[in-house]
Length: 300
Ligand code: GDP
Ligand code: ZN
Image (cartoon, rainbow, N blue to C red; front, side, top):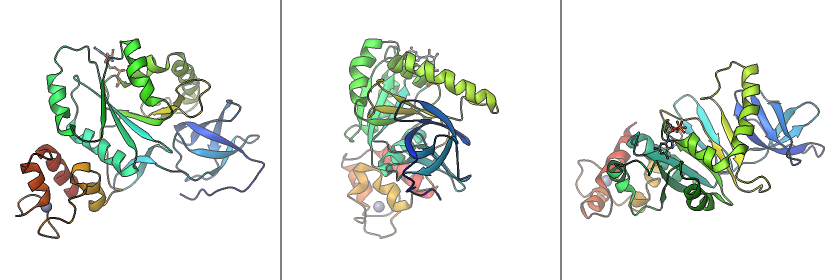
């Protein structure tokens, strides 16, 4: 990333609220939203980034220092999901049931970003919740908050979910079909539709292939600058190429303190004797399926 802090005092600072290839919507302190291009062709910007803007030219001139960047990566490139976040909200449901690999990858990426995790089990109105509970059971005892609700239940969303989003900068992730859009509609009401129209307009100027490729930032309340959330496109794969083996292990809270405690320094935590992680599982302190996930992540 070649963007640097700009010392140009004439520039205004804004918040990136939509990213779509080379086009960005930037919300200015006046709450006006500008459609801008980035001055640097190779700049990767994410919703939640603070940038300086040359308002007359509608150009992003610099990226301000960012913290807690939530992203995924394969061997070739990074895909930024949101910047300056404090919380990752993972939406799941009884139908479709969680893809356990994807769920754990999202958790690992959130841990590596150093942010809180909130699990939202949507579609609580569906009759058979047991398979979902079973899928989430290995996460019991981990520092992840879980709320069950239905996006159809406005009051439930208002009283159970909204308070957990206040004063947070959240990014929503979830498999397609779990009801992420429905949930955001219930939560944000008109605000979401309004920004939706705006993004449609800019999308039509481009390729027209938009719904799956852009991220958007919404303020939870109109006059509350500090509570916002980012809706990121649904993902099928969640690459962790940006994390080395030690970082992947450290992203499992139940195994973190055990790093370096196996008999063999290069322990693969599978067939070796005196493996501290396997011992934790056999004592019931950690879940076998989480260890299986970790092994998988250490090998890919
Ligand atoms: P997304 O792909 O995650 O954005 O999911 P959508 O919001 O498009 O929802 C997928 C399907 O699930 C739609 O048919 C919704 O009507 C349905 N859905 C969403 N929320 C709920 C819910 O709380 N309960 C039930 N029963 N269906 C829901
Ligand atoms: Zn081991």
